[in-house]
Amino acid sequence: MASDIRAKDAAAFEAFLALSKEIGDDILKTQGAGGNTSFKHDGVMWVKASGTWLAHAGARDIMVPVRVAPLVEALRLGEPSAEKATDFIVAELNASGLRPSIETSFHAVLPQAVVAHYHCVNAIALSVLTERDAVIAERMAKLPDLAWAAIPYRRPGTPLAHEIDRVAERRPDVLILYNHGIVVAGETAEEVRGRIARVTAALSVEERAAPPADPAVLAALAEGSDFHVAEDVESHRTALSPASLAAATGGSLYPDHVIFLGTEIGVLSDGETARAYADERRSRNLAVPKMLLAPGHGVLLANELTDGGRVMARCLAEVVSRIPAGASVVYLDPGQEYELTHWEAEQYRQALDRKASRRA
Ligand SMILES: [Zn+2]
Image 1 (cartoon, rainbow, N blue to C red):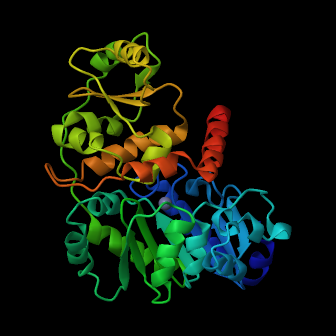
Image 2: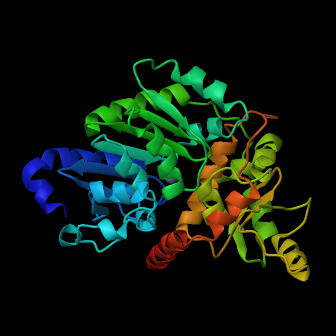
Image 3: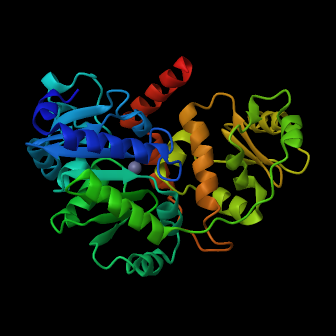
């Protein structure tokens, strides 16, 4: 992997991989295949491959080399090739044979050598609030030496890259992506690591306390259905406080939720089993949601869910327990949900996720 870089600038590339793994290992920053990092060197950008996990950086070949200048040019000309960026892969260096991340084009337009994008649960929780402009400005004012910008929600891929391109020339250190996450950039992995630590502290939101889940009740509700009790105990918080439940069921908050869990979360009425709920949905020719909330008890997940989907249940719990009770929230609109669920590049990412789940 990265053979030409290893010869010339091996230490910087290794430091970049180490940073990538750190981001990937932190559940409050990265959930499953979400997030991506990049490293530019001599006109080539190494970017995380679509569907791979940052947590595997260093252990597996997850970085794909792409040529920066022609990709940026294609994006600015509105050419469709900028969407998947596969035309810009440096084939002779691409040992993995993987495809670059669907978010590659925005990494390319940012001039900094190291760019880290991740789905920080604090950044998501703040950036879905109707009051987000003021709330985030107040937080970022604690870091006056960092240049930052807020980026309105756009579908990941070229629409988001165009939006980021509008501010890229100003070399922002931090971008807050509304209803999505965060980007932190710098010239070295060390510089980006330091900025990530400071921004994480500045944006940190205290979680709402929740009572424990009730595994026995949940197991009884799942009995005889295609659902199981969520394994990660922290995932249950979505159903354990009325404020969190309301925030989660009010609409779709960010892209990966829609992509992995769908646009609807089921809520069981008191005493209703998952099987009864699913039967009732099918009798009305309605799809059965992949995640069911049993208010006050916890979360049930569809057996068909992939590893990527299960970790998204945890992400949702982390996000909604950081949204203040009763806060006004900006959800994705139906058009934005539709473009996420009808998107070829995403179908590729999910297919990789299903393959990985089968192997595990
Ligand atoms: Zn993202």
